[in-house]
Image (cartoon, rainbow, N blue to C red; front, side, top):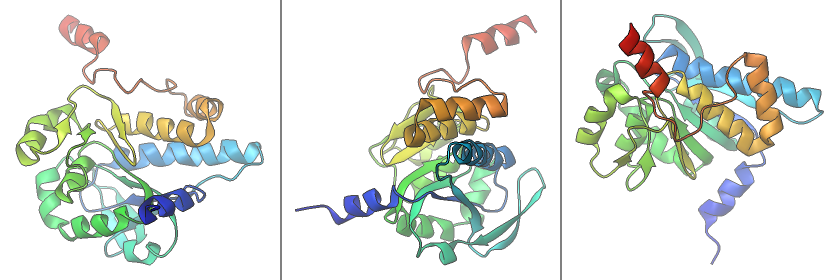
Length: 230
């Protein structure tokens, strides 16, 4: 028999709504790095006469949300978006992830519900902690920030953490390493949706390296050599 969840995911793939899940003390670049990729992709696609993405930043209560860096982001209410098809959920990480899991505990329940409605679910950096707490990563290989690897393995022993990967795809779940790796993840998602040429155009607009491969080490040999020289 056809799997209703798979049918729903296939339907959602035709829509371009992306929800960035906001919460107090989230990392600013975790959020805005990926957002900028999809914003730039929408401009590139418009030039080609193709549909782009509809981007929403939303939190449990809606309204202003203060990031870990202190900038306040205005958000919609997450529950108000559940009735429309969701292409992608993106959960940013937080430099204060232990406290964020406590302060935003109801977000875990929301993610369990939203997971079944979204075509794909992703996380940047320690956003993987929220997905793991919701039980969405059990048995999967995932990525997170290297600084939080020990804590992640202690808290979620049923999840296979890849300590080196920049990002990991375990469809319909994608996870990435820390901070700027969210840009690599978003470029990979744009490529998966629209092809390599569009993703290359986005990278050029953002003046970034096209994207690091998913299996590149987080602590790269070049960075190691620079650190040793310094």
